[in-house]
Image (cartoon, rainbow, N blue to C red; front, top):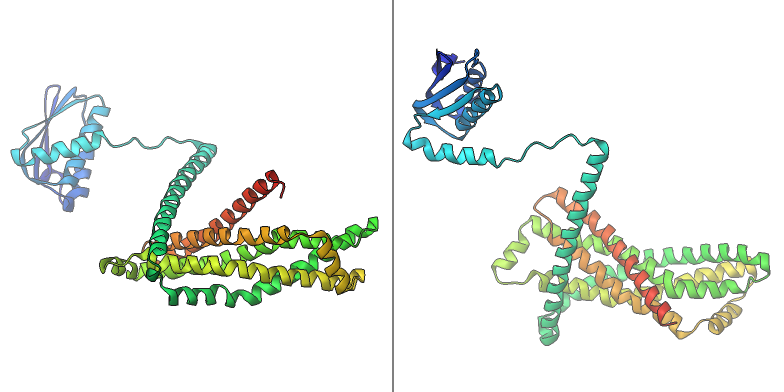
Length: 377
């Protein structure tokens, strides 16, 4: 390691401490120069003068070391000035000095409660910006949909049909099984409670209204959000990692038309059909459990269902399905296009896609409930 005399020469003239900087104050010698300046002692001096005329070279790292030394002397009560600045180094030193002046102070210790509040604030701001970006993406999607409606030939029909098969036909087993079991559980629990009042027959009413109006479409949408919404994010995100989306834009293709709209149209078409299938399977499960537990035959079940449910009960659930499908596809594709070139980003945004998709579906369902209640439907 070089000796300190090679970087600075210090002397005293009464109450004045004189310091001459010499040599090359560059990043390669930053540690040695820092050690040399830290060894400076004011020894009761009331003022100090740092002469830079002997410098052969200085870079940003050297300038930072210089200003740190000045700060230490001033903190010790020594009035310090810099002189003899070579013309070639004046601009660099001025820029570093300005940057040091605008440097934010270190954060104060705020404790656990303060840190928690800060974390909540940061997440709140991040959510607000993400909501703004999602709204912007919604606008772009609406504009692209308008172009498709004006010129239907722009729609990629083969891609749309493929996504209909993947998101719809391939989802039939899991949707059917889950809604069938929910119908079984709902019928059993309802019968167990209504039996206390001798009102077992109203189990059919409860099954019909809850499955046709709410549970059928809601459970189907949640399954599709976890299954297809996450797939949309992973597929588009992987294309972003491989820079395929950038390549599309380079050759003049619109990623929204190529990647988003086929998935969105496919989901909007198949989710009402999946909801109808889920309704049938849910009622079938409830009917079988009613036959076993309450000895209600299939004919009695269907007659009671026909008597106490109206066509609106069925259509309300079906009407929600396209809206839920649009929200799921919108969020899934939006998060996919936000992927930033790493596998970790794909996984994180896929998780966000599922969570946000389910959240928006439930919020939309609550809004529908308020609207239908106000309209007495």
